[in-house]
Amino acid sequence: MQHPLPPKKDSFLAWLVVLSAALFFCYEFIQMNMFDAINGELMRSFNLNATQISDLSSAFFWADMLFVFPAGLLLDRFSTRLVLLIMMGSCVVGTFLFAGAQSFGFALATHFFVGIGDAFGFLCALILASRWFDTDRQALVTGVIVTFAMVGGVVAHTPVAYLVAQMGWRHAMVVNGFLGIALWILMWWLVQDKPKHAVLTHNEMVKNHPFLPGLWQALRNFQNWAAGLYTGLTNLPLMVIGGLWGNTFLREVHHFDTASATTISSMLFIGTIFGSPFFGKLSDKIQNRRAPMLWGAAISLALSVYMIYGHYDNFWLAATLFFALGFSTSCQILGYPIITASNPAHLTGTALGLSASLIMASAALCQQFFGVWLDKLSHGQMVDGVAFYSAKMFQTSMLIFPVTLAASVLLVLWIKEPKHEKKMILQQPT
Image (cartoon, rainbow, N blue to C red; front, side, top):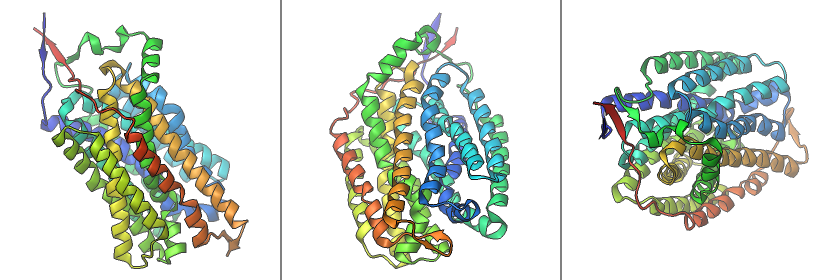
């Protein structure tokens, strides 16, 4: 006979396991956002324009988008720990290969390969969180996981830019690869699939659920689509400005030097480091997801307009603006607990994978659109052998952010507040 045993709340081991898994997501965020620090070096090494550098950066997101849905299916069926270690290892291999790339095509292929691993990083941490924490803590835990990722975003800016300045982008990527090896060893040591002696109930064991009906159930759940699209649209300033164009925008439009521009751009991620646990804690405390989502998106919309048209040549004013935008857009983390609460436990990975594919597709399309539009506006202007883009060109291209953030505000009106969040049942034989 079996009796339900509630999961432990906030145990040290639970935090240790989940945050160790979040190191994978943190490492992937370095790979995702390092182009903002090295895009000038890459453009010179491979003689690239804005469209091509956008293609190179967005290859990561296309890989993520293509594989994140299959990743959710795999994680519903196999050991999360095993999948995490395999995919983290593949990311490290891809990073070393990228460091040695001698052609644009090979660099594109290796960055795509690294992006495949990112399809698994966030999902692994979320699924482990759903097993180690009760659902009334899910928003806070999700916020902390995202905070770990934002640390990777910060590392991808000033520290990476410093390494590139000291040893060149190729050697900096080799250091990046060795960092990945160290994190892999730490995850191998600490990550566990579930609490000791706990087993999943029959309702949560995916082997008892046919594949196609479960897939169809996730696809026809409007909450998955709406929450996933909201998260993707709200995340775009971080992905496009923080991940690729922030440094160039600040140098060309506001005339900051490279070191200052890189630091200011990284403030988007520092803002998200503080904002993610804030929104998670606030949402858990008031037991409401939609209100913080609505206010966060609305404030982000106003800040994005000022980012485009405001005058902020002062370093601290610019840093404060980017911090505030990162803080407000971190409301996007609340889409994940809505998805978790809106699907059966055995479809958690599938539903999160579907939504994550929307998020990464939004980032990939926006990065490519931004680069193509810049090139269209510039008509091939060159300065010192590098493509040149004026303030007006950037302002026109960046209008995409107020549009997408306004759409995210409207999407909140379509998302339903979960009436109750399911609690995971753990059992042990007696």
